Length: 286
Image (cartoon, rainbow, N blue to C red; front, side):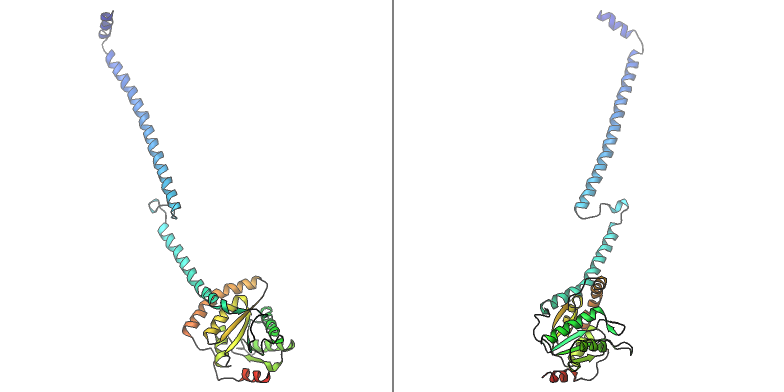
C-alpha cells in the first residue's frame, strides 16, 4: 500500500511542481500581508512619535510646530520677546514713580499742616474749571477751611490770552471762601515739571502739599521732590469713568517724559525772575 501510494505520487509528473508553486503563492500572500502590516505599523509609529514630540514642545513652553515642518517659531519668539521688552520699558518709569511717591501720600483729613498747597491745572470747560480741576480745588478749599494750609498756589496754562487756567482757579476758590490775598497764580505751569521747578525757584516754596487726581499725584510728588521741594500729595477721589481711565493710560507715556525731566533737569519754558507772591501771601496770614 505504501509502495503503491508512493508510486502514484511519483507517477504524476508535475505534481511536486504544482504543490511548490501553490505553497510559494501562499507564502507570498502571507509575506505581503505582513509587509502591509509592517508599513501600517511604521506609519502609525511615526505619527505617534510626532504627536509625542509636539506634546513635549508644548510642555516645555515651545511652539508645537517645528521649523522643519514649515513653522516660524524663531521669528515669532523674537517678536514676542521684543513686544514684552518694550512693554516692560514703557512701564518702568510709571512703576518707579509710584514706588517713589508711595510714602508721601496723604488724605485731606490726615495731612500735616503745611503753609502752601499747590493745585495743578486740569483744563477748562469754557471759562470754568473742568470737573476734575474743580475736585482738586474743592480739596484745597477743605484744607484752607480746616487750617491745614494758609496759601494756595494755583499753577496752570496761560499761553493764550483767551485761555487762563490760574485765573479761573482763583475765581473758583474766592467764590468758595478763600480770600483773594491767600491765592497766588503761576501762569506758566505748562506741565508738571515746570510747575514744580517754578514753585521752588520762582516762588521760593520749600515745602508744599500737592493736590491732584490719584492717577497723576505719584508723578507730581516724584517730580516736585526731585525739583527740591519737601512735597506730600493728596490724590482726590473721582468716579472711574472713561476720562479717568484715559488719564491713567496717559500717565504711562507722561511718566517716560517725567523720567527724562528728572535725569536731564531742563529749565521750564519760562523761568523768569523771583516773585514774592507766596511770601506776601504768608505775611498777610500772620
